[in-house]
Image (cartoon, rainbow, N blue to C red; front, side):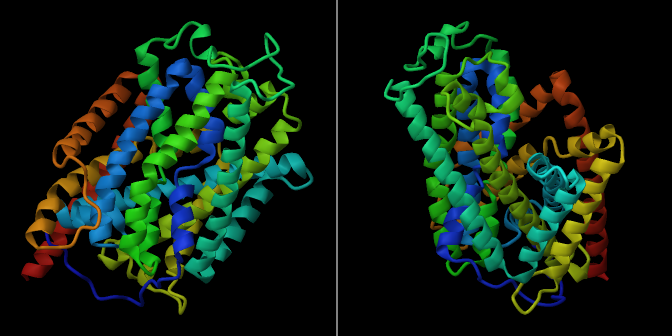
Length: 467
């Protein structure tokens, strides 16, 4: 295993400001994004009821990757998480590459979520332009992240709690509807009870197996964020315990929040209903049930979801940048922390790039921002692949050195190898699909550039050490 060269610290340490309840809710919030409430509608329209297979496949992959990451993070907690482990297990160039790609992914999330929030707020108060709302939301959450990690944790705690309450309420209403215990239905036969819609509109696989694979690409990115807990736990009082609990509970979180709620949506709304890709799965289902003010309810929930995602994007990007700085792979300035243990310049640097992207979204043609977003299209899969390779190599070293491992990967090394094989297969499939080819090409382009810089810097540092 490659050893990293530690650089002198430029100014401070992160502090354990997150409580157990913060870490618990952060682990839950990481699974629930706007993609569940809105994006899932497009996945359903693509694959029909068989979208459940797509979510099952993507969810299984994420569970396995989280278990691998949990093994490494519980044994050696670090705010750089998988970037640090790649640095140690594969080499500094790998840690550099995946760290900067991951940072870039979350920096681009900032304008996307800020714009989504701005659209909702502008519909309520049109007197303020969308760019004004986007700026206001981003500034507010940036300020909260600058004070202390406890502020991030507190905001995320309440954001997560509201999302969980909304999903549970939806599941309760959906189950009652499917069981025929909820009066006042609106539907073709005045009833949406039962599970007949799973096969009544062209069968369970109306668009064939290929559509299921295509839906996997949509669902895969809905789960990006589950790994944030391994970054946040490094700033808690008991990282190993928090990480262990989070990785053990990821199975039921995905099963309840995604599989159960999507099953209910498909049972309530015909998969070919045009409202699904237009307004999202939750709003389409609530409207099918005749729930008053369905749009307003979903808008509030989605606003909370995007605010949560924006909050996490600011936090995650800054901590990854801080970790890169600690390893000499980013400017020393980003290492410096405040008295509260906040890497202020890492937060501001990440936010600044996010602001520039927000401006680009409004000031330049749509194609420019779309091209920027395309560069992050396959980063999630690359991150998962690096995590699997790192765990495969680190496991032997951890056991050899007698390091305690509170969390262990199931079926090692068979399941680890299965993930390592499956991800390239998905990437190859993306290359064959016209709709995904551009995103894959743009991601490959930026990844190649970052790898090149990483290899160059690694060689320069190696020569400097020899001298």
